[in-house]
Length: 147
Image (cartoon, rainbow, N blue to C red; front, side, top):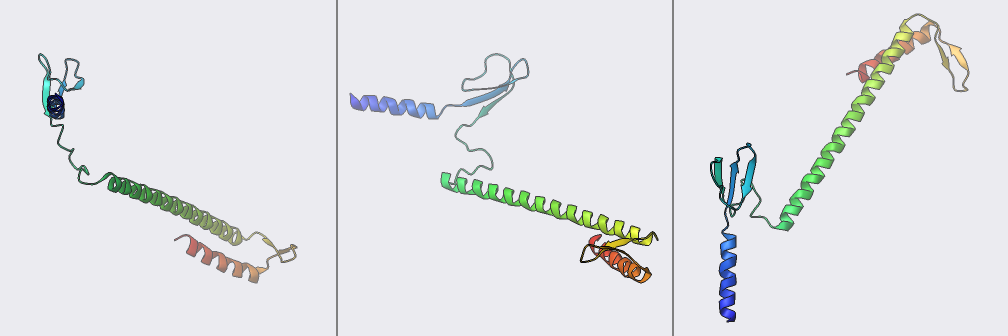
C-alpha cells in the first residue's frame, strides 16, 4: 500500500512539475497569465515554458554566487555614487575659487582704494606697488583656478 501511495505521489508531483503557463490578451486588452488554457477568442495566445530559465538568467550559479554578485554590484554602485558626489563637490569648489579670484582681480583693477589687514589685524591701504603685486597674484590665482 505504501508503494502505491508513493507512486501516486511521485506521479502527481511529476504532472505538477510539467504544468504549462499560458499568456494572452483578453477582450479588454489586459494581459492574462494562467495555468489553464484560454477559453473562447483571445488575442495573441502564447505558451510559456515554465521549466526554461529566463534569457540572460544566472541559472547556473548558486545562491551564494548570486548573492556575492549582487553585493559586488551594490558596492560598485555606492562607490560610483560617492565618486560622482566628490567630483561634484570639487567642481563646485573650483567654481567658487574662480569666482572669488575674478572678483578680487576686478576690485584691484578698478582703481579704488583697497585696504587690507596686517598680522595684528590693523587696516592699511595699498600703495601702487603693492596694488601691482596683488594684481599679479590675483591674475595668477584666476588663471590656475579658472581652467
